[in-house]
Image (tube, rainbow, N blue to C red; front, top):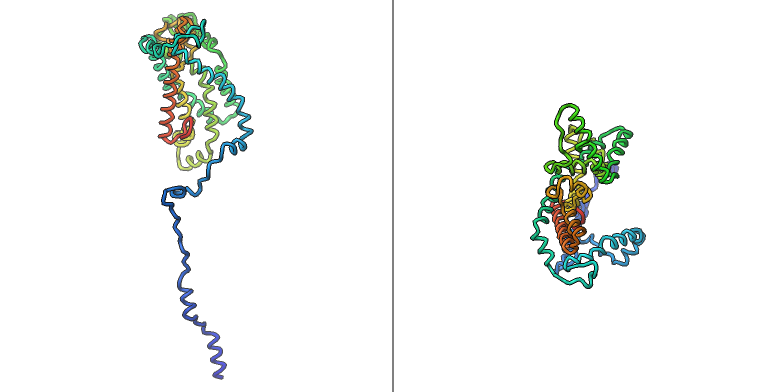
Length: 357
């Protein structure tokens, strides 16, 4: 009896592990940690994330990889080189007393004399002043309009109505400046519809098309009517890339329409706005040559003379090719400096700009 009882008690009593087993169970397994070795010379692998860097592929490897894209872009590059970069070699006439009858090789070299003449010419500075005033005015009152139109069109629910409005606002872009100025002349000219209506009601007619004081407003309104609709294409494409879930999340959080526009739509358009603003600043010294030359006689040179018309009248009409080339070269260098400065500012604010760092 005692033997059976002891055997049953031993079976019910849990076995005690030995000392070695308990120590192995009690001590948690620790994995040895290894610190990354840092090269003493600060070479590759010394900084965080350097292990993921890969060596840059050679030019031959990249060409073989993107060969089809290179061949596809080659015709456009050739056209750009022939018609945009190759003519830049003709800027050498700015340093010569150029005559088309003897050509560039036989024209005498005068150095910086033409640039000195340009800087001392008051008509050049008048053209610079008019150009900068027109650019600044249109940058404030014309540049935001395509953005506003794009957001309004994007908010339309009916696709047919949106397509019809887009067709209407796109159409003036394809009109020539001759037609645009003629339309404004028929409406706002001395014998136009506006003045005829004013005279019919006993009011005094308005001088719009020939008034130098209102010329700035006139050309800005013409530019808005002609190109504002075309400018919305890029912004509509950027708006279509915004995730609709962001609008839904903002609406769930209680944001009204204005707050959704301010916190969702405009941040989504910021990179496109910065890019177009940089390009506009680089083009700030180029103000519609055709638009100005068509209305120059009506309002006078004091109000409408810009750098493009100044170069045309001094170079083509007066035959002073070297002087006009010097003025054009100054304009190009200043435009390049504006693009580089604006792009640098874009990098400071975290945008990619025209080109990356």
